[in-house]
Image (tube, rainbow, N blue to C red; front, side, top):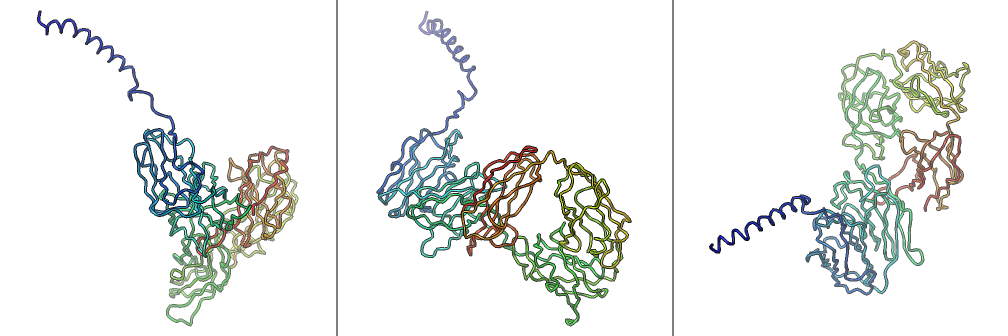
Length: 571
């Protein structure tokens, strides 16, 4: 027998057996060749060591990881403060990251390098927690700290926090450059800037929607601080620097169209919602003939259409049929306070020959017909299709309880087409109420009566046994502050349930007759007395108003008042 034959007989069969065994074993493994790597990467070593002092101005930083990293994730995960801008290079040597500053480090300055949880290894595992390396070119590590919360209806994690050093009259502009110190918010919107040197700072919050680390006005949200911060001496920390980012509207409203509804009514349509302030001043509307500059059309009444705040209705003197008119609008502002754009404040229209013979109607009312569990402090609201003769309405509306007793109260006309009736006392619990309007006796400014001869609706109130209250004391750390304090209790699972009250000064507060649930309390101090929250602006700098969400979720049970919810409004 030849050697080849002997090999075939003595070795080939065992080899095939072994190969079959190995193949069988391999077939029992996971398709990937083993369990997936889910272990977060670790940082093994750093140069210089954390909290090192007297670091050379040409120091290179090295960070060694436990495994291979996804280098593409570094750009959005690393933050260096003070911010070197683009004067820094990142190089990888295996599992080691090298950071080289192209300019000398600043003298007597603490540097902080933060690696966020967006940094991942080559298997997609992120750092379990953020890592911070602090070192100083001086003899000590700076201990300055600024912290707070960013409140946003959008994302709360990953919002950029930019802190600028205010030196030599500097007025930072987030459009032009990022902050000297940078960090991000956590999942709850909280943030902390640490190891800050003594000095004066201005902090902004950037809702960076496309994660490009630039602030793009009109696209990204901007949170403006309510004050600048000085860290000095024994006062090296500032807490509760809270923000409400908003996409800031810097463009004034534009007049889009003008349409006569008849010879006495004009509809002015704008491209955004308007403030009511200034709308009802008839001097803000100038209407002239395009053929004869001396011929003008008087405006008798102007009001904002509350259900559609992009529309203003004018009641004019009789228009001349087929005459060409030009209207100019002034001193009207959008909800951000921007005045009307002069380039888009004019329009032309053709006068109408139609007389106002259309009957007005009730467009909307609140509560709705057959509504149940209506709060006891409810006011009755009416929205009309056009202005009414106020006296004719007030004399011909009846509000009665189930015993046919009249409910006393007062009328408040926000416009001649929107009225609220506020009862003098709380309504009775678990009771039926009836509202009836003698429509044929209610007329508009031109004598046309309401469309229906009789209009009525009914609703029932909530049981008093299901109601409760939230109370406490509000304290303002700024003893020099002025302005009304607005408080709002919002049911966290049903945002449409909320209660509001206001205080002339710090002290006791109480939300009465509220439904059971879990609530948060929002607080605003209206420094400029304009009745709404002012977001401020970056350039020229105008601070925002102070805003706070009470940190506890307040649980309210029926007939069990929740007391002692003491709120401190930070300085």
